Figure (cartoon, rainbow, N blue to C red):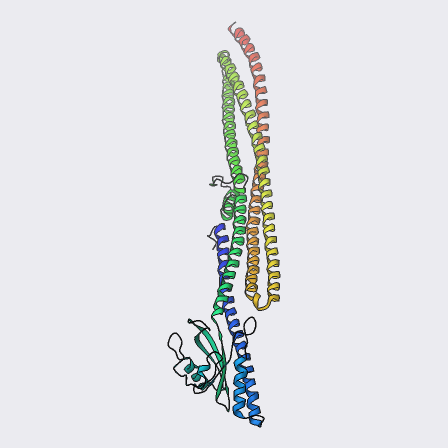
Length: 488
């Protein structure tokens, strides 16, 4: 996971959220299908129980002698023949009566079946005996009630459709009172709900994906590259590796500022090294000149006879020493100027590091905005869940999706916190780099002071050499006079 790029992490988070939304939508639809099936069974059970109660009432009248059994059965059949339920106006579905042996007792649309043995005569499109299914279902029932799934064409149509039958036995009369409900519309409702859920998932995915891409592009643009890459480069620079390879980044980004800082530091170190070499060379020349002067002075003291000729050479040497001191003075002055420019460069580097730190703070503000968006999304998801709860059964699927959107908002907030942690780490590295640059600035100040002291010392050497030249001229005159006196 840590080896994935920042953009890949964002896309992985969005893909995971999409998969979770799809799974929750499918589970919600399956739950919705179960609830619809149970509601159909409940409606069918209530209707058939009501019809059974009507038959039971007439059966009670016959048992009490209030009316003959034949008239009671006829009245019960006519009452159920006209009874309807279900549909928009409550007039769609009907009731039927069969004996437990498969004889027709009453069918509102097939009066010719009354009194007929219909076993094996009423079949669906697959050749299955529907009356046989009802008879077998009742025989296998222990409480005189049974649900029987069948395939039966709608009135006026020939295509068999799934229809759930519910039958209840009438004890004493050997009847089965029943009715059926078509269940093909359940799949149609589920398909409609599925398309609605998929549309919602797509909308949520597009919105979240767009936000994720915008956030990732904005953060990467501010940083100039992957956060892990920026941290690694800052670590190398903090450890003193000015040869670290920094990729080309967007102007104004953190990596771009870091690249400018490293370039300035490289140039500064090169100039300081060159100035130091020049100072060492000039100091060597001065030391060599002083050594020559000491040797020549000793030769003059030990051999007065050769003093006259030696004084000429000494005068030349002192002049050369004066010239060398003047050259060294110029080089020291140049080195001081270079060191001063180095100090200015370090100051600009410090300013650049401060700008980088400000950019990091802006990125932290952007992360705060993202966290606020995630919080508002969470509130909207909670409100959607409340509205879905008020909608009851029709809003269950939307409630599940709203819950997942809330979870996604929480994950977005967590991702924003992770990004903020990376940015804080970058800010710490920038602070470390700022401290190093500050140390470099202090070092440059010390170098400037040292070069200035060297310049003063060389100036003093130059003055002393000039005084030595004048003294040697006087000595030369005195030696010439002494030589003349000696010759005389």
